[in-house]
Length: 364
Image (cartoon, rainbow, N blue to C red; front, side):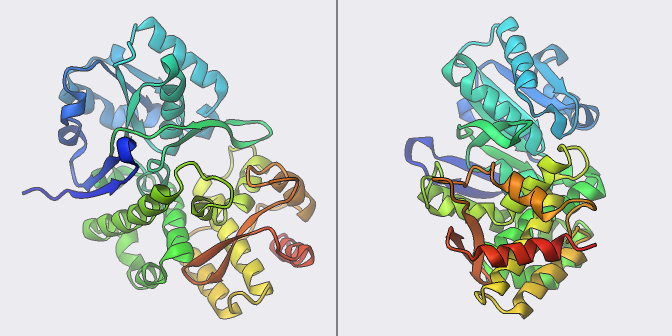
């Protein structure tokens, strides 16, 4: 019985499927566009122990045709990308070859970026293995690496051939990684789907218990939202709707940069950023304080942080937020809420109210 759920990211000639199901990684990679092509797999040291050999066997590849990076955000660098490029050149992968990105957001972003610039761009397939990657980072074509001055400041838009989300990989995901992925799920409910948010309030315990149907449900619903928004605004131009997907991220990226990408997971930083965005929205009277408290309560129930790391100050936030990609013409734009499930891009927020949010968040 085929249990695969299929969505489509509609981008004309760059359209591609998102396939979601249990135990589907190897079988779904046997799609026609890959037949007869040279493949190379990029994964990380954690995933290599669990999933690499079965995948290589299914693809009839050897370990020499896989590149393993150290697990963690510290691998998402220009230097690491350069090492992978040298490996691809040494293995004589031609322009009609294809990269398979097996891993979470770090592997997907790094492998996608390498694919975007290798011989001016080759195909790649996303096989996300974390909840965060399955609901968010594997979809939409954003690729890149980090810089000491900020997260994802070097990158390219490069859409995959397909996204294959195998929910079985979540059964071995460390608990902290699972919770970090839930931050992005909650984000989707806050920014675009109040019914999803309410569903999460009711079904959170089933998700935390790794109920397969509940996991497939949230992955499908989040991917459907992202596919719709990406279809409207592929390259996040100006004040287009794709920027809405960054709800909580300007605050969150500041936290990640402050901690050197080593102490907080991306989803943990986003979770606190969501709380701060909800607080600032309430201070503008765009949402009620009760709605903001519901957001914070769900994030806390999911076992995620709701305050910045100890020692981080409002001045740290202001300095690091000034490096954000959403700064235009010297003016910071934030994604805020006009209602639960109704996010907006705003450069017209009151600076004094932002100061109040920062002060409240950084309070010991």
